[in-house]
Structure formats: C-alpha cells, structure tokens
Length: 524
Image 1: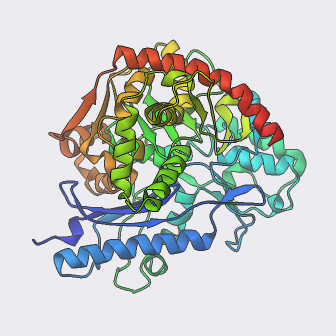
Image 2 (image 1 turned 180 degrees about the vertical axis):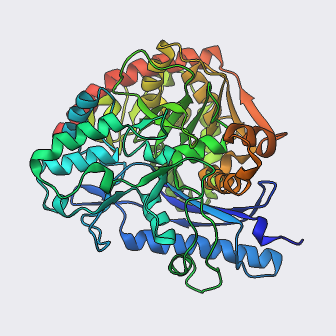
C-alpha cells in the first residue's frame, strides 16, 4: 500500500495518563499510532509533571508512531502534510524572558485557587473556575509569590509544546478559553475583562500587563506556524523528520473531544470520560445567569459552549479493578486487563439500579462543583445493603458520573436544547455499559462513534487536516459532516426508565454522602 506522506496528518494529545499520537490519511482513517504512559505526581502539595516528563513522553509517543509507520509502509516518516498538538486544558506554566520555567507546572487537577476564582468571578461577572490559568496567575499574586514579577509569558501545556516546535506563542480559541474568557464576537480575549484585570493588578507595579503575557488566539483552520529545525529535533531526535511542516493552532482536550465526536454545531454535545469527566454543550442561546458550576468556553471555531468539568471520574474505579487483578494473579488464574474490565463492568449491569443503597466517593483530588479542596476515596453502606460484586461495581460506575450529573442537572433546568449527545473516552470502552449509564444520568439518548476509542489525538489530527484543506472554504462543522463523519457508524443507547429512576435515587444518596466526605477530608 502506497501512502503519500504529504497527505497525512498528525495529532498528538497529552492526556492525564497517556500521550497518544495518531497519523491519519486523507480519508481521516488511522494509518499509524503510538502512545506513552505517564502519571502526574503530587509534589509539595502540587499536582505536576516535569519538563523532562513532557519532552521524553512526546518523543517516545512519536518514536513509536514513526516505527509503526515504517514497519507498515517500508519507508521512514520524513515529512507530514500538517500536524497539531493538544493537551489537558487549563493549568499554569509561567516562564521568564530566558524561557526558564519559574515554578513547577500546576495542572488542572490542583484546587488551590479558591480565593482568586471567587474574586475574579465577582469582578468579571463571569465564572472563573479554579483550574483556569488566570485563576492560578492571580492566586500567585495574592500569595505574593516571588516569581510573579519575573513573568515574561504564561502558557498551557498544549501552548508550551507548540512553542517548542514552532517558536510561536499562540493557542487555538478553544484552548485559550480555558486561560481567560473569550469574546465570541471578536474571537479573542474579552477586552473589557482584560482591562479590569490590568486595573486590578496595577498597584503591584509589575513590568507586564495581561496582553503581554498571554499567548495569541487563533481559530480552527488558521496556520499557527511551521516546524522549525529545532522543533523537528525536539520531536524526533533521530533527525529523520524534516522541518517545515505546517502546524495548526494547539487545542485543549475539550476541543479535540468536540471534534472527535462531531459536536461543534449548536445544540450538539459530548461527554469525555476518563481520569476526569466533562460535558460540552454547544449553545444556541445564552444561559439566564452565571452558575459557578458551569464554565463558559468555546468550540475550536469560537462558538460558545457550556462546560461541566469534574476533576474526578474513573481513578477510583481503576483502583478497584487493580485490586481484582491482584486477586486473579494471586489465584493463579490471571486475566488480561481488557477482559477483566469487560467482565466486571458487564457484571455491574446485573446489579440493582440504585446499587441497593451502596454509595462511593470517587474523589482522588478536590472537586470545585461540590466545594471540596481535597479528596478521600471511600465506600459507604448500611448493614442492610445488598453488598454484592454487581452492586459494588455499579456503585463505582455511577460515582464516576455523579458529580457530572449534579452540574448537568443545572443545564437541563435551563431548558438547554440538545439534539444529540456523544460519548468518548475510556469510560465507554466496554460496549453498552458507560453509554447506557450516561443515558440514565442525562435521561437523554447517548451515541458512541467508531472513533470514540481514538479520542482527542484523532480529533487533533482532523483539525490539522482541516487547516490543510481550509482553502476550500468549508466551516468546521460542515467539513466534519461532509468529509469526516459522512457514513460513519455509531451506536445509540436510549435511557432505560428503571436506570433513570435508579440513578436519581443514587444521586440523592451521593449528595448525602458528601457530608461524610467533608468530615473525612477534615479528619483523615
């Protein structure tokens, strides 16, 4: 099979536990892939990854992809039609004028910016979540941190990778909307809010203003630079990959998730569920008021999106499955990880719809939606609970979506119009399980597409492809409908009334359990 490398498109996404690289052809089909597993660390109370973690993980994921390509097609991967990079949104990477990282990378998982979040939300009349870059920056100012006066520029992880490869400090508008509020009419940072922030920090006498430290903003389809000689070596130290590849605007995992599920048109939405979980609903009208549980961000082309973001999803579920894996190995009958997941998750679907009163808290870290700064995973049950394997596993699956449901119920109370919801991410890998439970949580049909397993890295590759073909004039939503998803199969689950009722009962128990969770955080 002959492949024209000038008609291939690369997407690399930095997720919370995996860096994934996907190469697609002109039909948006995957032709090569690579991945690198990694984990964040809690250091001095801060969830972080080191710059070495980032660079080595990027190189390893690309190395594996390039080998996969050469093994399949008998030629080295010397050039690519276009490429793009994405990462988990938000967080804080502050650099001085010489490019030195001033403090360890503060990821989205940190909940240390409550005061800044509250003050900025009031100042702007706009919800500023704790994980947003501007909240981290202002909290550092409030904390009188020494590094702030030396800031030259602030980036997100996706923006940092893009800068290392191109020399350009820019972001896609979807990613930028997790740094600072965006004005959808101008496609860049809200000028009025920028002015308010500059006035707020004026008494500190810093040698910078917000405009000078934030990256530029681009929309999907625009060219964001080219792979430099240094960037090519940073990505591929073997020197095989040549410089000059055009690169599209870097995006966040929320934006690539929207693309991967064809959810960039008004009244569409998607739920991405893995280490964290978030729902993105593209709005056709504004919400009636500010909700601290709802973030306002944008699609990669700048349309307004209501986002419900939860820091915790499947980490506790994964931890319990590791315990069962240990037991299987101890018994002398080891079970492959994918088969173990399928076995236990399908077992969960035979449990009681409300888990018979069994409830678990899945919080590994703080959760702003429920006003907790730290997490303590735990399981609660009464003496008369039917404590079965099926109920235990179902309990963990419902817990993974419980905080999301609390936020989504606000949107549903606003009568937000949703024509379709699509799910993607690891939570949906076992056919019919996560999808069926999300349908129960939202009381809405949920679809999963064939590409759901490829996730955001594939979505980023599609954005790179869109930039390469943008000269043909299609809007992003039309490009996806007409070229990428035309004829693509999906599976849809309708909400089961018994599951809906069971989840509603479970969520009431979950809310009551949060008082015990607060006590556990305070005392343990």
